[in-house]
Structures are given as C-alpha cells and as structure tokens.
Image (cartoon, rainbow, N blue to C red):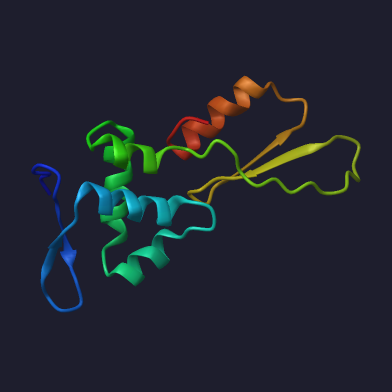
Length: 127
C-alpha cells in the first residue's frame, strides 16, 4: 500500500467501493479507536474499514509519516485511568493493562524509569 499525499486507499467497504480518507478523517478514526474506551475492532466494524489500516495509520503517525493532526491523535494519552485495590500481600504489585492487550505486572518497588522503558517496548510508543 502506498501513501500518496494526504489520502490513502483503504480496504473495500461493504458496497465494493474503495474510499480515501483525509488526514482529518484518519485522525478522528485514531482518536476513536485508541482513545479512552476505544476499540480498534469496533471502530473498524462501524466505519467499514480494516483493522490493518487503523494500525498502519497509527504506526505511520508514530513514525512521523503522516501530518501533525494524525500524529497527535495517535499520541499516548497524558493520563490513564487508575484502579486502586486493597493491599493484601507482603509486597505490593503494580499491574498495567496496555492498549494492545498486554499486561505488565511488577513489584511496586520497581524503578519508574525501568518500568516506563518496559511499557514503551511492549506497547510500541512512549510512556
């Protein structure tokens, strides 16, 4: 698949016609798919585009291959929801559910810089 200008060919929709999305439309798709409570599969189904296209746009945005508006939509959120549970064991543990479905578990005494590096490596973008 080759990106030409700001538009890109995406998968065939339900009516057999290819669509081109503008940079602003791609940014909106990324915000919906990766924003709080977002789901790539649900977004793709609703908009009749492939999940592969959404992940490609996110990768291109992170790598700087798309306009600034799209890159901003793919950026890691500054704040994420936190759930605190009662401490019952001898040592506290941290559990982080990443956007890609992976779960990172660590001892609470872990160096934050090390944990951030692990999350970045597993999630694919800056923590």
